[in-house]
Amino acid sequence: MENIFPADCEKSYSRHNNHGVFTVEDHGSACVDTGPVFTLNSSVYKKNNKRKIALLGATGSVGGSTLKVIREHCDELELIGIAAGSRGEALDTIAREFNVRNTALFSRDGFEGLERLATLPEADIVLVATTGTVALRAVLAALAAGKDVALANKETMVVGGHLVKAAERLSPGRVYPIDSEHNAIFQCLEGNRAHGNVQRLLLTASGGAFRDIPAEKLQDVTVEDALRHPNWSMGPKITVDCATMANKGLEIIEACRLFDMSPDQIEVVIHPQSIVHSMVEFCDNTILAQMSLPSMTFAIQHILLYPERKPGVYEAIDFTKALSLDFSPPDMDRYPCLRLAREALITGEAFPMVYNTANEAAVNAFLNRKLPFSAIPGIIEDTLESFTGELPNNVEDLFEAEKEVYVKVKSIICNYT
Image 1 (cartoon, rainbow, N blue to C red):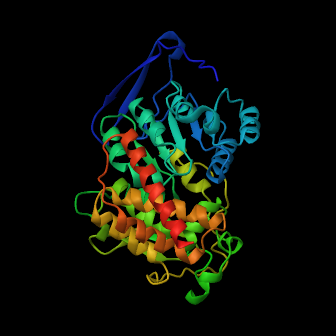
Image 2 (image 1 turned 180 degrees about the vertical axis):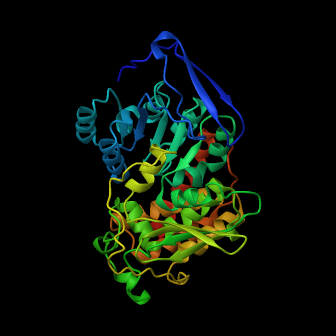
Image 3 (image 1 turned 90 degrees about the horizontal axis):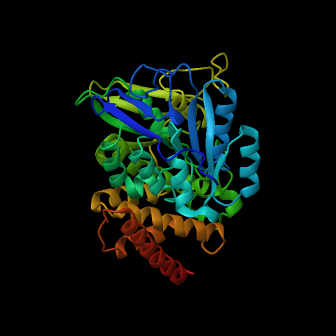
């Protein structure tokens, strides 16, 4: 994995304010950009050059949706770096199709491989579609290098949100949400975020695979049952998280940190059709909602081409046909992971990390058929109750704390079984 860019390529930045224009100028003959500057923070758009993307998590479901967007808009977007966990052959196939010279496998190259891609001098934006916290260091490195970050991964903000926000404050780059719910909120807030305007954020949830199954039967469901999501095609871990609604708990935490909201300003609404991806309620009691069919390509395209809009990869909603949109409050007895997420937020800054780690371990045990589905919330709750630590303020100590929690939750799982 040779670094094809010279070490003397330097960039200088100017920024008007936290939400205003910033510009990028490359110095050094190897990296001169003669076109107008692309900026996500204004209406100025780089017209003469493609937007260059480093994609971390290229072989997963979000990575696949990203590739669809890049194929459709290849005149505007260029893939220059790709990373995956361990699927080397799939990564090579993508590299050949898109003529990508910079690749990394986490199983081979570790954190350093991800960080190298996240700081490629030519990259305009780093799209993070990995699972877990594996890309946290890469996100911090990208921001330190002045890159924009498109974040499809919940765990980065849940576990290391305090580090990411601190890095963003010092960077000309910004963090943009690609998770469908948070991207919907981002779109609804655009131009509407004056002080005191926002009353509530309403996160929609399908309810997952077991929304309509009697609660007493949840103890008998299988892995195959849990992986049959009614609307979305996703990886196994997040699909199970949808069934327990732990994913929505993670999204509550992420929304607090992305949009600087308090927990009592965020509510979850069951919406079986997955057409309304989230809503924002304002101080005058009016609500804005973002709607599209359930495909990640909408949110991905919105950020990769922002602030412009282009024809979509996926079909539009057909209003010539009857369409029903249903909304209801979640059953908190059916979905205890929602309550546990709120309690983790309120209890202390370290507890969202514990919630995430305990859930990850419990879901892995369920997927490996070592734990029943109905035990997942109890494992999370027992882990939260046993935790007495504090939130570290650097990445290395944070990962060590995460490992310690993982060891603890594994012992809880062993005792359960």
